[in-house]
Amino acid sequence: MTRQEAFDLLCAYTKTDPLRKHALAVEAAMAAYARKLGEDEELWSVVGLLHDFDYEMFPEYPDHPVKGSEILKEKGLSEDVRRVIMSHVPATNIPRDSQMAKVLFACDELCGFIMAAAVIRPNKIADLEVSSVKKKLKDKAFARAVSREDITNGAAELGVPLEEHIGFVIAAMRARAEALGF
Image (tube, rainbow, N blue to C red):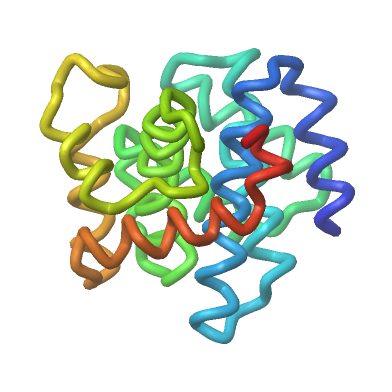
């Protein structure tokens, strides 16, 4: 599946702007990590775009991501790619045994948190600093639906210090600020 086909599929299933922007944010982070790691950027972009494409229709586990995986199978996505997408939901207990799976898990919740932190700032993501994100992470009332545990575990699974991971993802999202509505 091409990046454009993935985006079209995302838009067919995801009608709300915030969830589409979340997918675009995760795509930005995945693509940046693919470049850094010498991986297939388009494939990693597809995974970033599609990881939650089914969430509006099926917001609860096990429907998300199981029913989404069935749809992706019908669309011809490989078992490996579907396994990576399934593994980003901890409740599936699917091991994140590839670099792509680890990166997806590490970026998913963090991208949502960074979006929440950036949207309330006057300059949005343009001057968002790692220290600001870390400060907001300590505020349990801020973006309370975002799993801090998944954010810290994701960086640990990647073997990257949390501060470095946050900075890398901010930079990836900043590079696509216009598409993210910033």
